[in-house]
Length: 208
Image 1 (cartoon, rainbow, N blue to C red):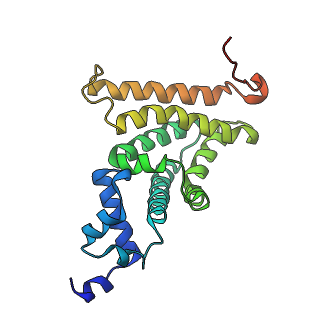
Image 2: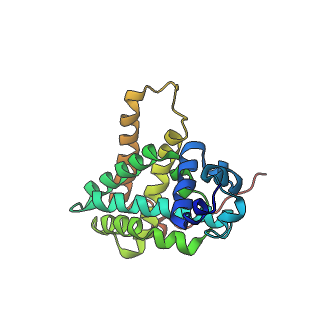
Image 3: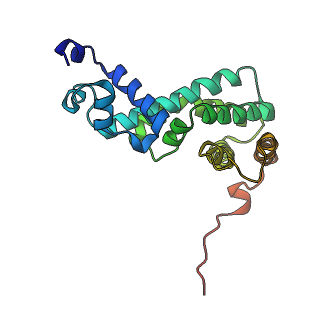
């Protein structure tokens, strides 16, 4: 390979190629060796653009979160309350269906917590606006948003992983199932169900 080819590499090209590998083969399949082969370069050349594999993977996580944030922010414009929460819920599912491997990556433990949560700003803001617009107190916004995401993630991650493929649930019924999950999460949020200051903190018990 010519030296001129190597000099055309930059961080954006490296990261975009890594994202393509993740989309095709999965987050765990991404290695520096695989990436170097995809770019037709030496592994050592990649270190001119990324520090190491964790740097690359953390960038993919942050970019996926930022992309999700842009999508939900656009979808949330002009929406409030339960209607807005429903729209955000369906946008989360749409992202996971379009980019199942990136969704799986962004729901892993962040490798760069500061960078990841900075990238999550638009998502956090969009959910916060919707939750606040339901009339909930500020101290309930974070826990309510997390509860909604946790409920939705159960369905979305199963669908993205292919769990429902060929299952006893027909594809035509999955939209109905998801709508029920969304309504359950939104209804709980709007009703104020399960506020920590109302129900107390539950601690696990040990068996006899």
